[in-house]
Length: 415
Image 1 (tube, one colour):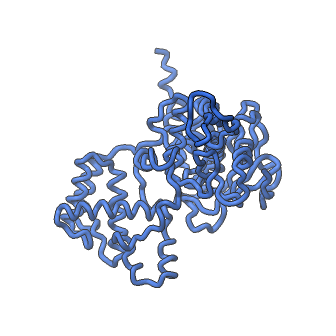
Image 2: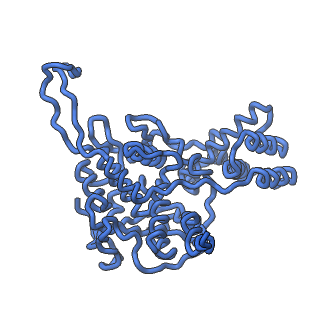
């Protein structure tokens, strides 16, 4: 599979092969690490963010990105002013927020309006009593503070877009919210890192060959005197999963970045491949493309370049989305995977390897890269070169457990 040569990336800036069998995880050099741009909505814990995609439609439980359709936020009270706006203006107004953010707003607002209906309260504009009652009900039902924070942000945004005052600034709401945070506050759950050696076991468990049962003339399976079965062929699901796991891990990609990859974003380089991400969580306006490198590994079974090229060749993909669904007939579909499907694929791959799936999500590949690179001695700045973190504090959250054991006097007490 041939890719265009990357622009602006000189030869030698990517790492060469690695004798340990996995690509050297980070490229040399440092870049200016600016303070982090706050994300609009806290999407909750890893389990709350990623559990949505489990066990959904299709033979593999995958969601297709186009199945959701366009978000009509005006119908649920979010961005209600779009209803009277010319369509061309409304399209730009909807584009002001990322799709994931809008989906979160819609879900949260629907939950709030449902609660208000059940308790005979007006959701717009919401009274302080209605808002505090809703927050208390969530807190006492066991919802996490991160979830409540997200719901509150969505309610505030809906009111602002409708021209109403922010209900969260009322003293009653502020007092109740502070009390909830003090009583129920806890560190956010983090996705378990998927990294070697478990990653190697998961890769080895990806199927390589698809076989077919013998059938009768009418297509029904039978036990005796079968017709010639369809010849075995490479398993596209296994090839795609292997490529997605390695590209997600070595590229330290978010699940939304993985599924948004197009063939036009992939370029060849003498040392491997370069991914050009036009947009990301911290680059939502696309003012500049972010570059991610995929160096070649010494072991072809663990090489993201080999795995990606193999998937694209078997699937016959030359343009459009890189990662797609696979039909029961072992054919690649036309439509890209949904970001929430990455969790389903990760958990499915772990299950094939006989490993536990609890705590793992679509974010486990990115978390695995950061943790594994840190354990191998890479500096925080070198890791951030690949992850594109703008805040060293955010990066430190991934490795705090392993870092807690490094150069710690408690480990040398001689007890």
